[in-house]
Length: 426
Image 1 (cartoon, rainbow, N blue to C red):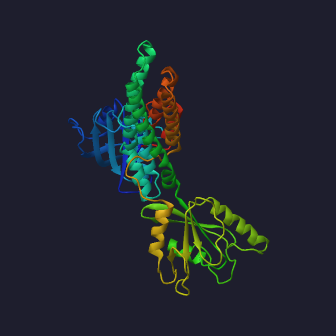
Image 2 (image 1 turned 90 degrees about the horizontal axis):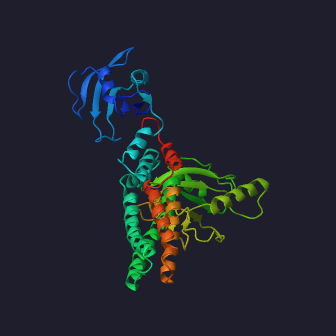
């Protein structure tokens, strides 16, 4: 069945694209486009596009199966970017027998036709929906099949171990030799190390997806709101010399080296505040508890912050006073130390960017965790010299869990959910 949709964002623009995919797409194109000769694949032809009610002068290109994005015959009309022009051409394709594409159906057909893996499709969705450069780069790593390649490599090692184990189960009289057990143990130890490293990257992956949460904390009038505005580059929070001006949390977003940081300006922490300020302090404590990194503007004694959360100690108002024992001295007025502070935020809040496989999706993490648990169960059984049939199922479980990363063993509901992230026309 031929599907059709507008592949570009709706609105006025230089060019709009109407895309068709499926057997019969070229036949519909022949009825609508002025070219009379053969369509050579991958060539843009200029001519008239007949939408029935009107005509437009544009271009048409044909991609022959299987050398197309979807793996099927695909045709694109490149028309002028008016809203009604694209809609009219789309309507004409539907009148001539095409069906309106569902969300993500072009990419879904590419997946079903083996043109890309499930994780690559997710990477494409992440790139489209990215809110920072780092999200685009991480999505591209998925789209470039980095995670799929690593998953398949680990599956190959598990399959190798499983072959020896299944042979022992099928022919119990030929018990596994000590050398074979050691070989399986060595292989699975390598798989365990790789999966452990992969799972450890999920924290960084989550920060890429949702942003690094930064809480600015300190006593009243420590300069939090002034520093907050300076980091954002515009006035977002109210600044006053009167202590306790900030009564609620205020958020703003800034990119540092392509990574999105969500800054939260909080109420000053102090005893003896009034009822309204106490509520602001309670909300400040909530923001601090959920932060990935804390900016502590040093003034007075440092409070007890959540264990394990990186803290950057800032000596604010460095143009007025120079504080000792700080990670960085900053003046929002002169700009001193702001670049150094951004660098510290990046290092402690996010860290070095990985150019290998990333676990960006919770689905990936759960699958990798299940595989890791099954591999560890296998290793424990092998090291205890238990019969092979007791851990053969663990090996199969690890293999199937890794298959969920690529889509090889993903359920239909998971696949549908993933492609719902796409717009119509992609």
